[in-house]
Length: 179
Image (cartoon, rainbow, N blue to C red; front, side, top):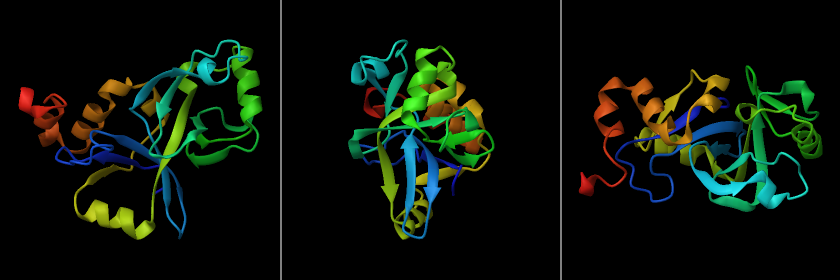
């Protein structure tokens, strides 16, 4: 499951996870951890770390757990020590202060890192059950290009990539009752 993306089924009626795209980073016998890629908050890195020059990087809502903690995914690999490779050129975490140093010295572009407030987590059986019940679609063919997509279009893009016939759902507004 690591390195895969969960795409909320168009008919998922969950409130929090509606139309979410979640990148799964950790998979153990205890559970699965991931981050919502397409729920951008109004905050930037400079709002939570005002001393960081060039802190215009957006913060995304990673999930409903530990919302008071900041996490990050990136494509910088060994340029950030203690990073954990998830898949190909996508990495989880690493030395936060090294990342801040790279940002301050203009050595990181916005498409190379995403910051998240909180995370999404499931027990392994829980997530497998939700997938079997069609709450989630999965995409195993994910690259760092995922960071290049606009957050607002990511759910639509992933949904139609997984199943072209879902294009009709992708083009319906967030509240179908107003269409």
